[in-house]
Amino acid sequence: MKWLKSKKPKLESTKRVFVAARHGSHDAQHKLTGQGMAQMADMAAAVQRVAVKRGLKVEILSSTEPCALYGAHVIARELDIEGKVMPHECFRADAIHHGDCELAVKIVEALFRDGVLLLLVSNVMMSHRLVRYIAGREGFDAKIREIRHGEGLMLAKKGVSIIPRPQQ
Image (cartoon, rainbow, N blue to C red; front, top):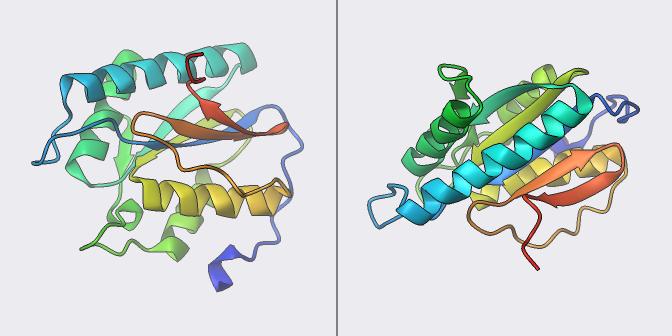
């Protein structure tokens, strides 16, 4: 795929993190359930821990899908950065909406910089596409299991990990 090819420099700094999160559990009308809201609050806490530990500013991208957008707003509220969510139709990929991977990559590349933890809240299809792109660019193993509702995949200098960490 043409959009997977990139000549961007590899992650050489611990001051740059990308998290692609799947929205929380939702009902048939794509509204977050109580469980989904709790999952997004857990995501916010995990993102906060990473951001504070590494001294990073959090920036939030979101799909325009209702459950993803609402989940992004829940996270922003928890992180006390309300009004800072950047929704875009290009991140919406489902049975009806195809998303725009080339535009999504351009947006992520523009915002993925030192001093930033870039969080994308979307559905599983777009989250995995962008994780595979960044992981491939960084030389990480892109064979990652499907993330569950309320989980994310974090890409940093050391590789790919699940966030928040699964309970044992």
